[in-house]
Amino acid sequence: MDLQAEELARAQHLLEAFPQQAQALDLLAHVYNNQGNRTQAVALWQKLVAMNPGHAGAYDAMARVAFLAEEHERAAQLWHKALTIDPRMPGGHARLAKALMGLGQMQEAVTALQKALEISPQASASHYLLGEAYRQLGQYEAAHESFHAVLR
Image (cartoon, rainbow, N blue to C red; front, side, top):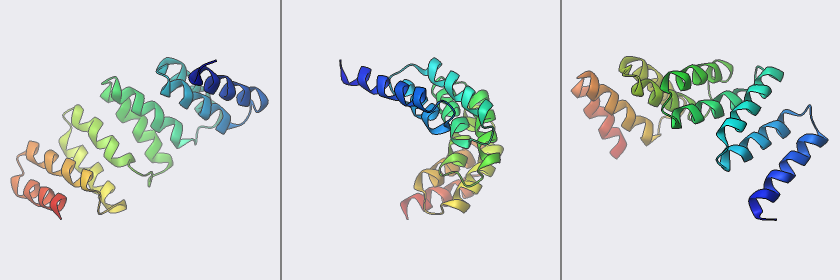
């Protein structure tokens, strides 16, 4: 048995042993996702949020899958749900901003990035994205300040 098959078998065994445990379901979903079976992973995360609607991590994980598939609208919706549950989710506002930028919603992206920087003021990636959003809005002075913050 190769390593991936063993990983999958062990995760499935854990879920069989603990079928009502959110962590077991989430683990199996992550295994499927890491092995490239995103359809099965999303199905499990949907089952997880049906069992536990307050599981922000499942919404975040589904949003990441949607974003990678360039489904920016779906990703933004899912990140909004995740951030409603956990407004201080590490990196959540920055990931939401990327989806909003993909939709051309630069002002909304600026708002999300400002929240990201309130949570993590030194996040250079958020400063960079904020500079890019300001640049696309034609707010060049603000863009300059954000890009300068990246260098600091």
